[in-house]
Image 1 (cartoon, one colour):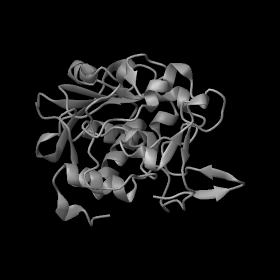
Image 2 (cartoon, one colour; image 1 turned 180 degrees about the vertical axis):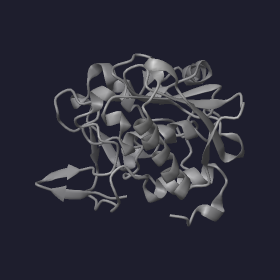
Image 3 (cartoon, helix red, strand yellow; image 1 turned 120 degrees about the horizontal axis):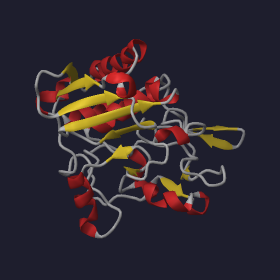
Image 4 (cartoon, one colour; image 1 turned 90 degrees about the horizontal axis):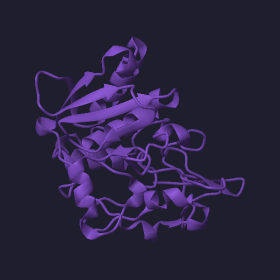
Amino acid sequence: MKWFLVALCIIWVNSLDLEDNEDQLGDGLPELYDGDMLLTPEQKRILSLDGKDLWRVAHRNFAQRWPNKIVPYVYGAGPIDGLTKDENKKVREAMRYIESKTCVKFRPRQGQRDHLIIMKGRPGCWANVGRARFAKVNLNGPWCLTRGPIVHELVHVLGFGHAHQAPNRDDYIDIKWENVKDSEKSHLTKLSSKDWTMLSLPYDYDSLMHYRPNAHSANGKDTIVPKKPRVPEKRGSGTLSELDILRINRYYDCPPVEEKH
């Protein structure tokens, strides 16, 4: 979980790259939470219980796990929602990558009520959080169909929110509110410990579910700043961190594969 210093600037290297692509994330769709999460009516209801911008993410009954560790999926059909053969291949490669690191499997739907629809409908890249009757991963934009964003959205579907909203983040990062767009300040809200559990794992700077330093910036300056410079975890672009892998496996009760990575 690491950082490095280059030209006197702290660079986040393996988190979700928003620097040149934030406009593709959800393309400003107002119903999305924190840029790319599509909440169900029940999730919105839970979010409003505290009268604050808090929501019960995975592990606290906010998002449901997929039964038997299997995510049934279909591809969107037709000229609007359909992906090309090459795009389908990229999605399947991202699924295989997650499968190679965890016990979760993605399988073509065989009549299951709750299933995932992978589509290219409305603009941007976004997804539902956790299991739902018609859970969606939307990938409409060139950046959306690269490995990092595809894996990021699939992890949302597995039931996970964003790492930088963890309840203990104030021990690790500072949010520079003066640099955040007024309309997007709620996206950087810290979540309550009663709504989010860390699964006995430490804060993860390197998570693929952690936004880069300039996320939601109004002026190009950093909005998410680590309290201490760190050496980044060495891994390929668009890959899960070591803690991402542990977190998914613990949530899906598959400790035997925790050493798979």
